Amino acid sequence: MGVVQRGERVGNTGQSCPNGMSIETKVPQSAAEENGPTGSVINIQRFSTHDGPGVRTTVFLKGCTNVCAWCHNPESMRMQPELQLYPERCIGCGRCIEVCPEHAHQLVEGEKQFDRERCRVCGTCVEECFAGGLVIAGKRMGVDEVMSEILQDETYYRHSEGGVTFSGGEPVVQREFLLELLRQCKEAGIQTAIETAGNYAWEWLEEMLPHTDLVMHDLKILAPELHEKFVGNDGERIRSNFLRLAETGKPLIVRTPVIGGVNDTVEEIGGIARFIGGIESLLYYELLPYHPLGESKRESLGQTAEDRFYTPDKEKMSELADVARAFVGEVRP
Image: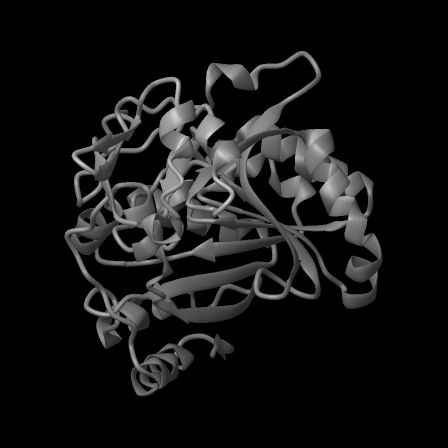
């Protein structure tokens, strides 16, 4: 059943992205609770094999300080929970219209409509939607709740030299919550990794490094003007933080999402490889071809993207990897 969405609900912190979106990077007031820090969690993915060595649990935290136009996890940008709507799953039962206390779901002249400006993300409609057409992205969780999930696979971590990876969004944004999770993981003898894009005050990451075994750092674009256009900032702070991180000697993996029409050039990939070449703690440099997964997610949030990107073919990816190998010892793929 088709659904018309009206009123894109986004925050406003003065940090805008190229397609007109804005993001929020502050934890809501409800985060302060007597029993310790809580955080906004999108998903906890067990048996992950793509977010660091061995078998891992990847914890995806909500909130980001970049606004990448191609983001494949747009539901992770804002800290607050958001309602995702998938019209193709709707069976037309009308329960969401009946139970919504804000009348955000309506039937107008036989057409199902959803008004995001009315929605308060209370979850009442989600509880009634057995077809899975309505989903809330983001759940408030305590450290103990997350650790309970992580500890379930301790045996797999030990036998595979795996562990836990904190991703996002930008996990470092949730400083207090992430720091406590890292501390408790290390106390439990679990190897820890952070996936980060580096756009924050250096001190935020610095305080986490004693409890972190591996940092997986994104470097998306080197040219400041392109970085400003597609990521929402000129990248200067990211580059500065990255160099400070390299000086610490912390084991490091660098990743670049290769976006067709943006950074899939010899100049960009060669420039990034030259920038990171010679770092002794660099384990390898990974090139990740663009995946259009974020397009359907963006639509589910009532958002539209002005830019359309494409996935570079295998020949292009191989060419770029060869370019990077002139500066970096190991390049994947």
